[in-house]
Image (cartoon, rainbow over all chains, first blue to last red; front, top):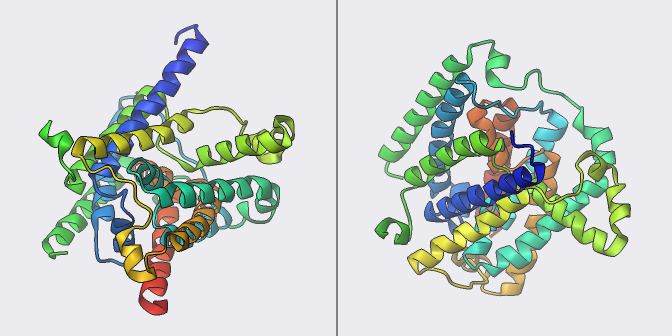
Length: 185
Length: 173
């Protein structure tokens, strides 16, 4: 690693910008920066979001596990809980259907000129995340440690080697996409 | 060039591209994708304009997650730029106030849409931080690492999202 930390920090932030640009570009090209497409997914009439997410997950699952096998990366895993993951996920789900975007696609929607995403969604998210920061000690004390999950990862939970879980997951997800594509939806 | 100018790609191609990008991101910058923490940081910065930097930095949340310009801020800003570039290359950039599907169900008052988007945004922001992640970090980043929290968070987000959408669009309207 370079001794010049300042330089390193700049390169690190530049990578954030570059990967963000790539991600936003692909979200838009994939069609998921559209309210109509996301609401269509939640109403189960348009499966673009699922197709995009599952193909990203399949490619990344194989790629990340190869990189980890080669010793080039370490995973970023953390332990979830019912009080955090499930409750937070449910609050998110209600907002998701009302807003019609998740945080990533919301940022993409801003880039495509959707003013409701900028002046409604982004402002709302700043209020919501600020509210969380404000209530954090209380939420942390009351909820976060309730029902802590027994494992960080699926292989750890199932006591199976990671490669076997990856194989089964990739086959299941690819099989699901194949059936979805041939069901005419 | 034709490809860059296309209005829409196959979701499989865009998705596979995102998967490759995520691998490169972990390899080159030791970061996986995520968006919601950056919003908390920006909210903290805005709050510090009113209450002073020190008062905000002393909040327990910001003592645990220090208030500073971070990789993810650039990442989220990049998403805006990337989506903008995509629509400019395809000639589809347009300022809009109401999504077509929203107008069909709720009418075409842009103030109604703004208020509903604001309420949804508050819940999305609160829920994403509460669950320590959004569909980008739990889904696109967490599930490929076989994160248990990732699978469960995404299942809750989509199950409740689908339930709420059906309630709003199929029962109430």
